[in-house]
Length: 482
DNA sequence: TTTTGAGTTGTTCGA
DNA sequence: GTCGAACAACTCAAA
Image (cartoon, rainbow, N blue to C red):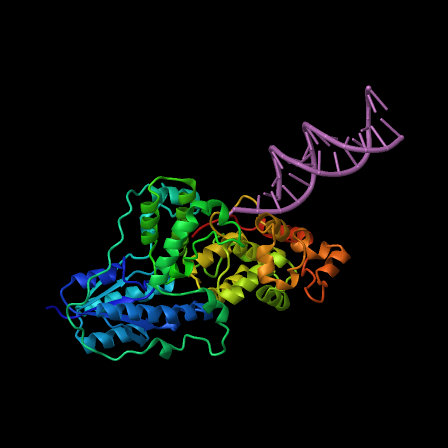
């Protein structure tokens, strides 16, 4: 019997298709599953409020699952290297396995830890458990990273057969030495004031629930995905983003299940798989352009004449801009810790183009409020919407919140759900209550400026202002990548 | 994963 | 009955 191996869990809080855990279980010796809470190592992107909430329940769930297999989870507080050294000493572990992360700070830390511990004779091995295609495996013909999604995804799909997910490892054979552990509650991840009721009402963290969501999605929504995913009032999407972020399900498991259920190519199926592609693309970009969480990929945008307006920012954050669709999105986020992707584009465009506030402010707010806050995805999303990132359109995208409402929430059911003070307005006026005739407003018990705010800006004026602001930088230094 | 405005075509209606 | 204004509905290029 060998000495113990440590499996360092991070954003891979599952047992199935977990290469690090699987490798440890195949090895002949006890396993010490370890979680280290070290938020300062991720600064300035330490987990936000909603993420912490999720993490608390994920750790409880992971701990329960491990317990039934006979591997009690050890939870400690960082710094990571220090904790690893401690645990190695306490258990006489001789091997350490983990699944790789792709955020710049995590890469630096992990590289340092790997070389330090390897040099002391620990068998350190790392694995891919979070991506279908690791960033250093995909390049264009000039050997450079792709900056356009479609080409990137085509190149990925040409890589050939996707390998199958790894199974659940067997029950523990050896008994790990018993060492001290914190409980999830001792990490103080849950809020002290109970703002989490809306989140608790709809989310169930944990690998088991990720599975259920996936099965439900494949059975009920996948075949209508291409159309239905556009309607925020419907349940046309998979709701898997937070599970993917914390690794409670792997993209490979999703891919495999979807393809097993629908072996034939189809527009619906492939439209969904393509979304996994966007996640891959986001990680790819973050890896190759590690400055992008704070700085624009297109450098000329660092001269963009942003405004600074705390009042406007606050109105956006709290969902009081006077544009029903924008406000509905922001309130859904605040209450449930999640926002439909179409709304992420609409509210993002509104912050950046209509209010001319820097996209970094939006990214920060999302980081704190989203249960699926993910550095790669958040960065890609905000740079895309600001027009300063990859996959830039040849035009300056400015979403019209009224038109978007009419197209994607024509019946107003989404707005009515999240902006109840407008609920009684007829469909015709619900996306633009300021234009409704006085008797209609009266009938609906809406008083603009009292029960619901005046529009914070006039969209058509704001649109022109944004185009003018863009002109100020288009003369600036041309597009370049470092 | 867009919007706008200009231009075109088609329809209605009244002089 | 014919003509043109007005407008709706649509396409398309440009941003």
